[in-house]
Image (cartoon, rainbow, N blue to C red; front, side, top):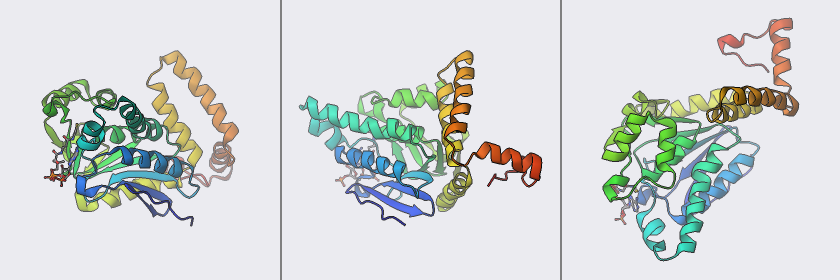
Amino acid sequence: MAEVPTYENVKIERDGATTFVILNRPEKRNAMSPALHVDMCNALDWVSEDDETKVVVVTGAGGHFCAGQDLKLFFRANENDPKAQRKTGDDSQAWRWNKLSRCPKPTIAMVHGYCFGGGFTPVIACDFAIAADDATFGLSEVNWGIIPGGLVAWCVTQIMNYRDALYYCCTGERFSGKEAAAMKFVNKSVPVAELKNAVLELARNLERKNPLTVRYTKEAVRSVRGMDQAQAYDYLDAKILALKQVDPDKGGDKAMKQFLDEKSFKPGLGEYAR
Ligand code: COA
């Protein structure tokens, strides 16, 4: 198995075909510094291309997900340096939204402990999110006298119901992992002791699927949200043809043969074509 790269602010750990990308500034509750943003950009580039990784999990070290942007290093240190502000803003955006939401592999946010402010963006950018029941989420920007910028307000409205988005952005009130699951901000929440197993259970399911089918499916679901019905119909038609073309395993044809001719496979019961 190929060695994993090392970074100052990010840790990489493998568990079978699932790779954990871990924000690693536990002493600062994984607050995001400019250097962490650069490391995360590099780590996501690496994991996206790593042949042994089928599923990517994003989480934080030390029992917490992320305390948001590092107020000292991300904001104050760059106050009078517009060029540095722009560079670190771009890096921050690049991994938290662009690279994560376009990752060619399925992504799962594993949220425990604190998740504040800018830490919401990667949770939303991941395809799936599982939280500890007692995780603490907070859009605390309003308590700082700032607005949820850096795309946070936009991300939040992609996934939260409009009333919840306004409520939590304007009050800065915290909500738990259990509450996050009830409002479908995350797929589900579990007791913290079961969190990693719950994440791995989902990951193992995804690992067994045809990787190109999973990739094309998640791209399709994400993309059609911004389309009208006619555009979506055309786009999905083209996407089906594209998948047939690029899939070296010809998964669709194989599954059809197994189901109709060999009668060896029942996809409706959760079996996978091999
Ligand atoms: N930026 C910079 N430093 C941060 C930080 C942030 N967003 N969040 C935590 N830290 C630092 C603290 O300053 C402290 O550093 P120190 O040890 O050098 O004093 C260290 O991380 C631990 O934080 P501390 O507050 O002592 O831990 P705690 O467990 O009691 O509380 C939080 C944790 C996350 C509740 C608290 O630190 C907090 O409210 N942070 C701000 C979160 C936030 O609002 N983020 C959104 C910003 S828009």
